[in-house]
Image (cartoon, rainbow, N blue to C red):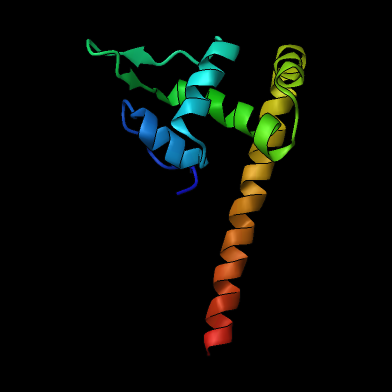
Length: 114
C-alpha cells in the first residue's frame, strides 16, 4: 500500500501502518525518529506511537531522500535544512510520476487482456 497524499488521512496511525505505507520496518522508523527530531509521534500511556499527518509527511520526505534517492542520513538532514521547499517539490513530483506509472501499467494490463 503506497502512501497517497490525496487520500484523507485519519487522525493517528500506528507504527505498523506507517511502516506498511512506506514498505520499511518499524525498527527503521524508530531509528529515523532518533536521527530526525522533526518526526515526533505522540506516545500513548503504554508508549505506543501514534503518527499524525505531519509525521507521515516528514517520513515521506526522508524516505524519498534516503530510500528512493539513496542519500546518506547526514546528507538528507542537510538537504532538508538547506532546501526543504525544493525537497518537498521534488518528492511531490516523484510521487505523482509513480502514480502515473501505476495508472499506465493498469491501462496496459487491461489492453493486454482484451
